[in-house]
Amino acid sequence: MKNIIITIDGPAASGKEKISQYISKKWKLKHLDSGILYRRLAFIFLNDRIEINKVSNIKKKLKEISSISYNKSQYLRTQEISRLASKIAVHNCVRLFINNLQYNFVKKNKKIKGFVIDGRDIGSVVFKKADLKLYIDVNPKIRAKRRYKQLIDSGEKSIYPKILKDIKLRDKKDKLRKNSPLVVPKDAHIINNNGSFNSTIKQINNLIKEI
Ligand code: C5P
Image 1 (cartoon, protein in one colour):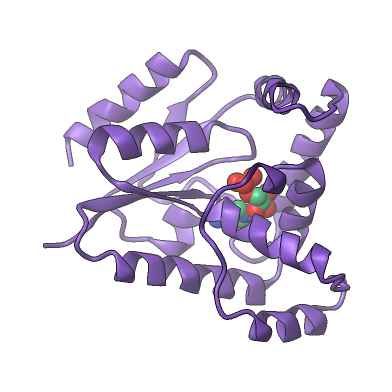
Image 2: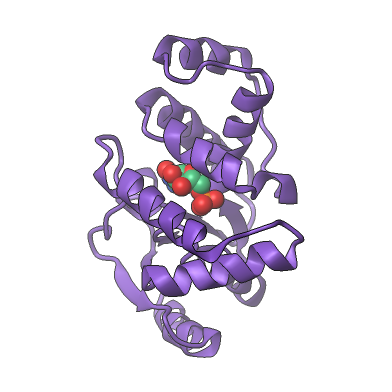
């Protein structure tokens, strides 16, 4: 039987993770957060002091990496890693490397019912033939407020105007890059997540029931 694939794209801090986790639990689908893969790579480059302004350095390092973990960790959520992840994500070699990890993840887990995969290019590039494509839309100020609260709750020092500036900068980088920019994928349903979580998941559950 074919696995179900639900893709969730949207800008930074739009609530993709919380929504994906909810869908994963309710509909018994395996969750893959593609942003974590970009963050893990950013962490490796930072730790190994790779000069990322030179694409040849990035390509050389990618050849040395045989696997990376899909597990989430709080240390990958810092502003420094967020910024670096979005910088390396502009390179085609990085995107191809991470897309392959995602294809392998789906291939390895053939026996399960399906997947919910979130990121920036999942419905538009990585899984174009997904069964359901969602695009999460939220005003940048609301996103910044939510991210600020998240960081404060997790014990990181944080300043709201700086978060808002960072979010706008990451949006710009994600939307304007040449390779796999953040777009509303063809056939995607735009989900308004400016309001309560309950109203968001109500819109989504109705769509999932139809597939
Ligand atoms: O979603 P998250 O904020 O964890 O992603 C970190 C960064 O990785 C994003 O700002 C984006 O630049 C990049 N990314 C991407 N494509 C994806 C997932 C993440 O370019 N599918």
